[in-house]
Amino acid sequence: DAGITQSPRHKVTETGTPVTLRCHQTENHRYMYWYRQDPGHGLRLIHYSYGVKDTDKGEVSDGYSVSRSKTEDFLLTLESATSSQTSVYFCAISESRAPGTSGSYEQYFGPGTRLTVT
Amino acid sequence: GENVEQHPSTLSVQEGDSAVIKCTYSDSASNYFPWYKQELGKGPQLIIDIRSNVGEKKDQRIAVTLNKTAKHFSLHITETQPEDSAVYFCAASGWGDKLIFGTGTRLQVFP
Image 1: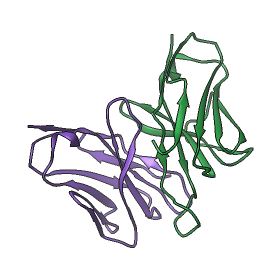
Image 2: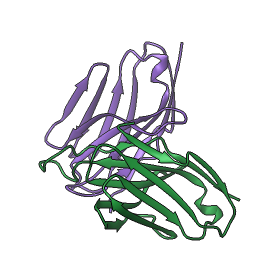
Image 3: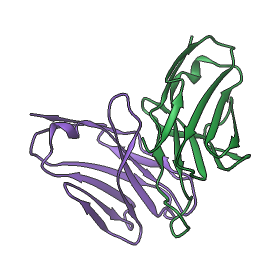
Image 4: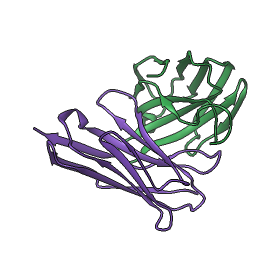
């Protein structure tokens, strides 16, 4: 999984509790992404980061926040978990955001975190 | 924004046969089209990608074709093997833009 770890790998939590998922990379890649995967929807981007302390929203960002204080770590926080946030969450990394720029454009994914909100 | 449709949602083939998965996209500015393979309990793995200045790309038993005029691209797997069984995702993005994924195709290869 291209030097990407996610923790925890599985979590069950109750509605209304805060949850933080961690993504850690050893590749020193600039870009990091959080996706959620749900049946019938494929993978949808939640938030991404283009450097330390630089983040932006994806297509399904409501109810989620992120932080990146170090190149290697990207945290996803659910401030108050809801049942609709039950999903499998994947972190991804890439060196660059566009072909023709320095570094690899391809995104590589971590092993995922299965989150259940009861 | 970009929208990617993927068909079929499930595909069953006999070992040794070919498999074809098709995707269409809506944004004519998209110029990068990767394919991912996801095995049970694992993250998606990039298996091949194509850029808009190329019509076809091959890597051993897998190939991807791109028709920019029709805005569709396809994944071709020849001489399928049981280990090809997985869920396959296509995706599309424009220059410096975010990846938009299709909904996935579950491929089953029967021995």
